[in-house]
Length: 355
Image (cartoon, rainbow, N blue to C red; front, side, top):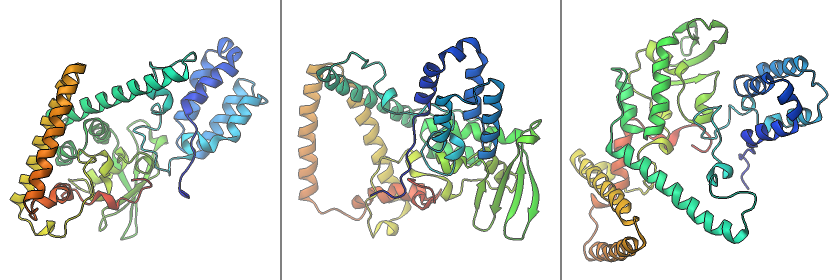
């Protein structure tokens, strides 16, 4: 049904179960846990992981441990080094996975009944939505602090959600400590070696095609997370690429990600000021809606009043829409926003799974 779907085990659940299965080792060898996680999380290539794994087992004399052997046999489903070429939307290869465990954290436990689970599920969903609204509000109504004079950083601040921008900013700032050195140039594709000062043994290779503004890095961070890595950004810096090429801006990470993909054949004919007015109207409505939700959810009584008013308002909007023909401008909301994003490019063309 979904041929390109890839199964992945929850890495943090494996860490937890390993701690239980190897409790005697964790107690007698306190450094084992640190080295075990380092072996899994910090190795970037398959060869590096394999070498580190063998070394770990030999140092702690656990070569014949059945649990570790079973986990090794399933390594392609949970070890990051084997999945860097697959898009999972992770912000970090070592960051805790957001799954069912974290979703229900604080709401259920081992003694929770089915009846209680249903009630707690509703609370968990409400809590999740509240956090999402808070995040949307922060993104819309506050401005991040820029750390460089780079036009690319300013562009990213306007495009990305706050959380994604902070991750991008971290990568951008790190380019100052990761210089790019050209090691080969075929005329169409240039190859660069990028390494952090003092860590030349951990160098990454970036292939860059200038005319297409395309680059790929051996760390495969973009392929895995959809966020461009410091190594490619270092090459962009060396080549004086001042703004993010379109293919490196995934719509899912932008402020406009929740806007639908409705198309209007007349959208491209609209003057810029029409598209800008649509954008302004959308942003104003969204900000007011966020305030409305925050006030309307404070109590059951206020919630009921808010819902009644909202339903009545929706009827009025639908009535107004039906009474007057929709102009080309009014029908181009999505495209008005998409054209704004088009300055950074059509994010739907990114060659990345699930992008």
